[in-house]
Image (tube, rainbow, N blue to C red; front, side, top):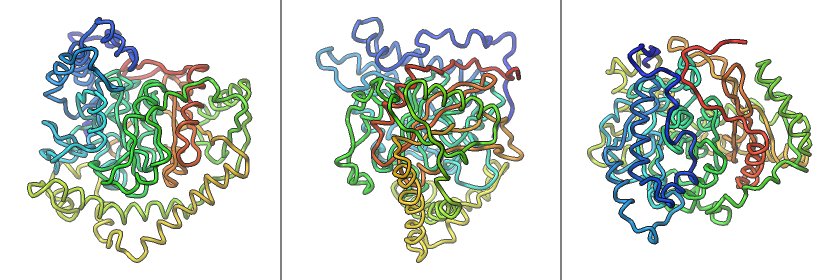
Length: 516
């Protein structure tokens, strides 16, 4: 965890100059319009983003990027050679970043932030990477993350990995980015690519999206394949898009969906996925809608509560109805979610290590634990209690495992989200996504963390967050979540909110923000 905030000297680029970028805040449609009108080539655009990574990520100490694809310009050049009438794919020529727990079969390793995997080169693309390439995207790099997706040990600091150091928040470089898709959140907010892919088990897409002032979609588990992604939980894991606009999130989401025989969870999505979610980009997402707000989700931050009250007034002014509801989850459901993650972690990691073939740097969770014990860097700030706990179980063969999963899903679905939605006749549940970014603290780990992610995470239901406003210059998101496979209506709600009440602000890489 490299906690030192790198202050820019007079000889370096001043903060006020860091957003002088030709493609600042450009989205997918704007980039592709450049190609269609021959104002830029794919190589021009990819090079511009690579140059920006070098300037922003390195000079500010943002640390959002673990690795850059050495073949990115070559790939861009090959796309430029395709005749205009032969070009296809919703993401043609779009520079994207992947969280570094998503396999790519190229010259970039997939490390999960761990020194144990620093030189680990997967034998094939993850299904997500394959689909993105098929849609024409250019994968320009891998983003930093909370090591092992923030499930190695207690008292961790979100955004830290032994490989990548500490990711900083682009609004205030002394503050946190939340985990574990921290680098994806910071990089997209900083305009280091058009969009990124993160992963979530509980909060790891929506929380960094909120703290970094961007849009994040945590889909229904099974909507997007997890094959080729370093796992935590078979029950709760999912990848999802992290973007600056709802439109980009809708476009990106549609390119990654589909049944994958390598991931049984995707079978249930067969009659539920859309390959084009842009049809939900209408302004009909608020009027006449009923939103439920569980008051218990108040995160205790007075300024966040005040901002949310103003947002409720806005929703009401647009013809929506907001009702207060009781709690969604009980404590036992949360406890069972943690237990199932411990059971599933061991089997999932061992299968992942097996997928790396005979030259895998580590062969098992037991090997990983021993590696960490012998590494001065790995355990310098916090331990590996969760790895040890997982290794001591019988994994998914543990006699207690099936009942643990049943209780977690029943508590979060039938007795949780589904119950609240039905009782109050809701279209969605809303909440502030998280508190404003806190100061990163490598000694004590994360503190004052409150994220509304658990109901949708444990149930496996979809969740979208978009900027709601800011508190002293730090962004705060609003969350919309609902029943399984409801991505379309959530996108419509979020898009309407975004268009009628835009709250995205461009970060300026300050080292302190003035407190009002």
